[in-house]
Image (cartoon, rainbow, N blue to C red; front, side):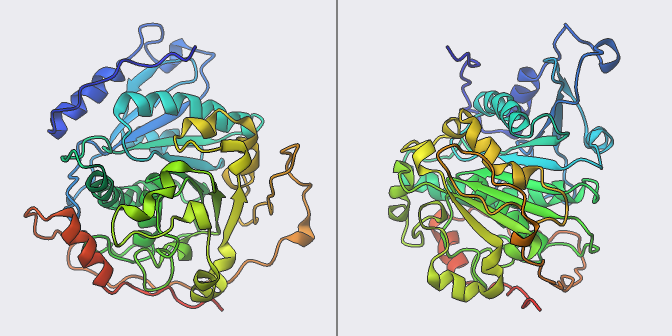
Amino acid sequence: MRRTLPRLNLSTRTPWMLAGLLSMLLAVSPACADDSQCETCSPGYWVVSTYAMPQHPGVCPKQYCFQVYRKSACGKLQRSSMSQLQQGVDPNAPTCIFVHGSFVDIDSALVDAHHTYGWLKQGGNGRPLNVIFFVWPSSDAETILLPTKVIENGLKAAHNGIYLSALIDSLPPSSPVCMLGHSHGTRVIAAGLHFQGGGPIHGVSPPRRPQTCRRMRAVFAAAAINHTWMNPENRYGRALTQVDGVLNLINHRDAALTLYPLVSPTYGRSLAKTGLTNFDSRQLGPYANKVHNLNVSPIVGVRHIWSTYYTRPEVSRLISGYVYGPAGQRPHNLAVTPSFELPEDDESARPAKMAIHLPLPEELDEPVAIVDASPVSAEAIETKLESAPLLVPPAAE
C-alpha cells in the first residue's frame, strides 16, 4: 500500500507561510545530521522551489531567490542553497530537471519526487545523473471555477518558465540538460526555452546572456499546451531553437486532455493528443525534425496523473535516450514495441545535426523588465497574448 504524506491546508496565500510549510516538510532527519556521518549516502536529488517568488504573470524580482533543498539517497532532507547546488552538481554527468503539473501541492510534489527519482535511475541502469525537481505553486488558484483555474495555472506555469530559465543558467554549462515535464509542467518548460531564446513572457523580456555550448533536450508527458504554440510567431515560437530535440509522449486515451479544447476559446487540441500536425510541420520547417513522438497510449491508458507514468518502468527505459544521452548525440528513434526494449544503437540512423545560429537578444537597460503589478484578469491576459507579436526563430541553414 502506497504511503503518502498528510495533506496540507494551503488556504493561506502568503509566500512566507508557503515557504514555512516547505521548510517544515523538509526538516532534517535525525538519522543523518550531515553528509560526513552517512558514508552510504549517494548524491540523491535536489528540490528547487519558487513558492516565495512573485507569481503574478509579468511581475519578476530583480534577483531570483530560490528555496533549495537536498535529499540524499539514504533518506535525509535538509535545507540547502543555490551555491551548494552548483557545487554539488556533477558537471560531467547529465542533468534532468523535472517540472510537475497543475493542482499539485507540496506534499504530493515531494512524494512524486521520491518515486520519480528512483524511476529515472532505474531507466538509466545506474548511470550517473543529476536530478532537480522544480516545484512551483500550482494548487492555490483563487477561483472555484475549474476552467478559470486551468487558465490561471497555465499563465502561472508560463511565468515560472522565467524562473526555470534562470535555474538553467545557474548550472554548469558542460552538463547537458534534459527537462522532463508533465501536463502544465510542459508549459513551464516551453516558456522557459522560449525565454532562453530571447522571447518575452507576459511582457518580461530576457536579459542579455552570453552564448554557451550547453546542450538541452526535453521530454513532454501529457503535454497541456496547444499543438501550435511552438510554431514561429506563436506563443513559444523560439522554444525549439534552444534544444536538440523534444520527445513528445502521445496519449490518445488521456481523458483529461480530451476536454482541454473546451477550457477557453484560445485553447485548441493539445500536443499530447495530436503531436505536430502537417500544418505545424510546414510552419516549423526544419525545426519540425526536432520533435519526435512516442505513443504511450497502450501503456498509460486514460489517466492523466503523473503516477501513471512513473509506475511503469518501461516508460523510463524508453525515455532514457533523452535523459541520459551524451551531448551532441541524437536520441534513439524510439517506437513502442511489445517488449518495450530500446532499439540497437545505429549510427547510420542519426541524421546530421542542423547548424543553427542564434542572434543575441537585444540589450536591455535593466536585467529584468518589471511591468505594472496591478491585477489583471486571466481572460484579459489570454486575449492579449493571442494578439501580441512574438519573435520568430531564425531559419536553420
